[in-house]
Figure 1 (cartoon, helix red, strand yellow):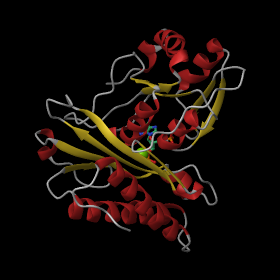
Figure 2 (cartoon, protein in one colour):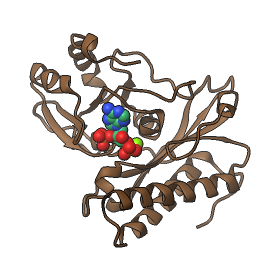
Figure 3 (cartoon, helix red, strand yellow):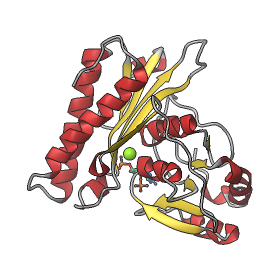
Figure 4 (cartoon, rainbow, N blue to C red):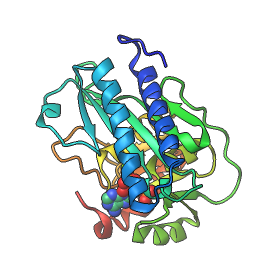
Length: 261
Ligand SMILES: Nc1ncnc2c1ncn2[C@@H]1O[C@H](COP(=O)(O)O)[C@@H](OP(=O)(O)O)[C@H]1O
Ligand SMILES: [Mg+2]
């Protein structure tokens, strides 16, 4: 692996996500099962990402699902927001492939205004990495009802109702990164989630989705804001732009039931 120390952040995000993904595939070839396998995956991917970030971006802050949070990120100019293993449950259920590595960069500066600027999602079991360095191209969708990607293990209760009102089909799968990518791979038109999540679950998927030109927002239509004091970011909508208004209007009728800030 070659990384240019001063090189492009988007390319670095891709390289890091890919490297952690290879380490996770190796962990998965072992004999561990269940919780032991989940823990081994979380720890190994965190180790790989932390080491590479310390080596290539030593001055940057990091917010990771698998490391203690530090107040330093709140005044930092640059914060890497990482989920070393998203879809941990699916990772432990061989041979499922709906799990991912998320690497995103948030930048404060006047130029950026505090937003995600770069990101990559590795889907190691599918041998593919999506990144803002080479944004995926959104293909035309097939005719038919709206397809809503939702959590396979924790689908928000209101989503069934929303799907019914939209005449939509539910497409359950693991991992926020995999669900976002299902929009540009044309397996779904939207990813809708509520009821709990953290910044690391959605940062890299949202960065890549934005580079594709997709709609990204909270479910009340407000912007997704990262590097806040609390890393909780409990809901989101990522979708083809043509469906945003319709989905948001339908979801709005259910917001009092589901919103958690
Ligand atoms: N209600 C909830 N509260 C907290 N986190 C949630 C959640 N629903 C989903 N998530 C997190 O969002 C990610 C994608 O979930 P899902 O696969 O169910 O869609 C998972 O991350 P991890 O696998 O990194 O823990 C999961 O833990
Ligand atoms: Mg996650």
